[in-house]
Amino acid sequence: MTEPVHSATPPAHTDKIPAQNGKITVIGIGEDGFSGLSPAACQVIKQASIIFGGKRHLAMLPDDISARQSPWISPFYDNMPLIADALAQNPVILASGDPMYFGVGNTLADHFGFENISIFPAPSSINLACARTGWPLAECDVITLHGRRPENLRACLRPRGKIIALSHDATTPALAAVMLYDAGYGDSNITVCERLGGEHEKITTKTAREWQHKAVGHDPDNLIDPLNVILIDLVADATATILPLGPGLPDDAFVHDGMITKSEIRAQTISSLGPWKGAVLWDIGAGCGSISIEWMRLGGCAVAIERDGNRCDMIGKNATRLGTPDLILHHASIDHALDMAKTASDPHRFPAPDAIFIGGGITTPNLMEHCWNLLSTHGRLVANTVTLEGEQELFRFYNKFGGTLSRLTVSRLAARGNFTGWHNLAPVTHYVGVKS
Image (cartoon, rainbow, N blue to C red; front, side):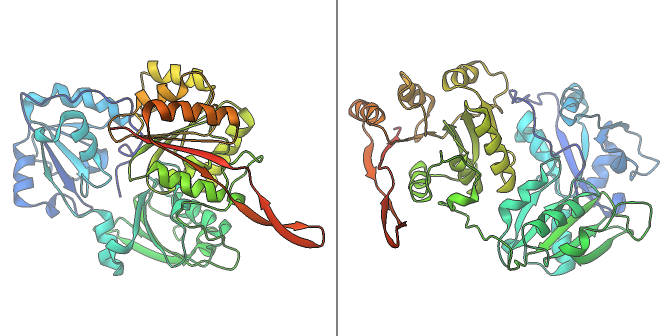
C-alpha cells in the first residue's frame, strides 16, 4: 500500500538538483511502525533535524523524536522545493514499504539524482501479500492503480493469469470487480489484503461476482480500508473475449469506421516498429488508434495524433476498452501537432519518440524528413500507404535515406453469391527505416 501522493503522473521533467549540501535518507516503514525498523534506520530518525512524510507515517514516530516534522502537501511534486530548501539539514523521508517499488524513492531519485540519496527499504505490501497467500511473485502481473486509471487492469486479462494491483483507495476492489465481471471474468477470485503487517491486518477472498456488490459504507462488515492491495486469480468464463498480447488483434476488437490498419498488416507493422518496454511511439494519422494501442499493450508508451474528432472519440473508447487509458491523444492536424511538439513546455505531452508510424498524411510536404530528424540513433520510422501518390513519396524518401520497401498483400475468404472466394485487400506499400 502506498501513500496517495506518489503515483500521479509527474509534471514536466526538470534538471536534477544536486544535493551539494547534504544527503537525503529515505526510510521505508510498514504497518508495524517505528518498532519494525532496523536499528540503523531508527538511529537515523533519532538524529534527524527534519523529517518529511505522510501524516500516517509521522504519527508512527515516538514522542521523543526531536526533529521538525513536515507532512506532505498536495500535489506531491510541490514538496520538491521544500526538500531542496532542507538539503543542508540532511532531510529524512518516510515512505511506505519499499520506496523504490512504485514509491517515493523513484520520484526523488529522478529529481535529485540517486547519488544524493540513501535508501532503507522495508517489505512492500506486494511482498507481504505474496508471503501471506503463497503466490509466486515472479509469475504475477504487478500493476498499480494508485493515481492511475483503473482500466489499466484490462490489459492484463488472460485465462489463468495472476494480477497483483496496488489500490488507489477503498473503492478500487469493487471497481476492479465490475470490470472483471463485464469482461467475462466474473468467476475470478479477488483477494483484498488490508493494512498488511500491522495489528489491523485483514485478508478477504471473494469472486469478482461477489465483490462488485460489496458497498463501501458504514456497515463494519462492508468497510474496506483505503490501504489495500488486490490479488486477482483470473478465471475466464464462456462470455470472455480472449485477446492475445499481440500484435495483430482482430479488427473487431476495435471500434472503427473502416479506417483501420487491418490485422495482418498491423501485425507486420508493429513488428517493423520494434516495440520494447518503455519505448515511445508517435502514431501520426492514428485512425482508430489500433497501432498505438497494440504498441502500449506490448509495454510501450504512445502518442496518437488524429485530426478527425469522431476518430479521436473512437481512439478514446478503444484505449479504455483494451487497457491502455494512458494513451496520449492529440486532436490536431499533423502540421499543428508537430508545431505543438516543438514548443511544448511539458514533454509528457510529447515525449521524445523512439519510433514513428505514419499511417495517414504521408504526402504532407517534408513530413518524412521531419519525422526522420526527430528520431535519435536506433530510432525507427515506419510508414504505410495504399495510394500511388503515397508510394511515390515513400520511394523518393527511400532513394534519399535508404531503408526497406515492401509490398504487403492480404486475401481474405469472402462470400461470392452462393459460393466463396478470395477477396483481395488493397495492397500496402510498407517502408521501414532505422536511423544509424
